[in-house]
Image (cartoon, rainbow, N blue to C red; front, side, top):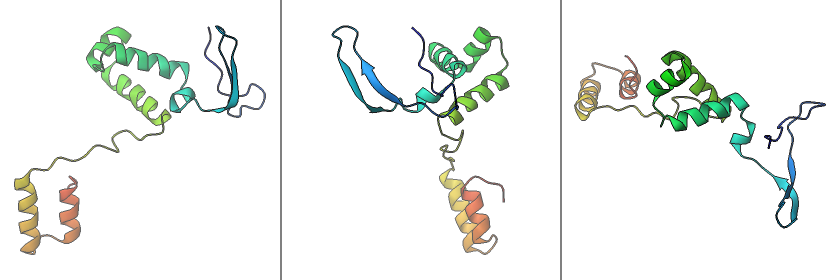
Length: 127
């Protein structure tokens, strides 16, 4: 069995699934169906995801299995993340210790730093 194409072979527009069929009981369902974000991934992206899951997300195991470097695997992972509509690292929260937060707030209160500098420091950016 082959994966369904996602682009029209004539104009390259995105194809829409409009019919599902059960070969066991010969039932057909017609409508407009979405395949979700995974339906838009390339075969290479899907192969990468299968390998990633098989290796339990351990990049060092993927390095061995694929014979690729850590940076190459990270780049491919970022490609898949972008293809799914996300931006790598965007949702990562910055961990700041309570001591650091208190120090920044004390410096702000004492007038040693500006409010903008304090905000950058609390976001984990360099002042």
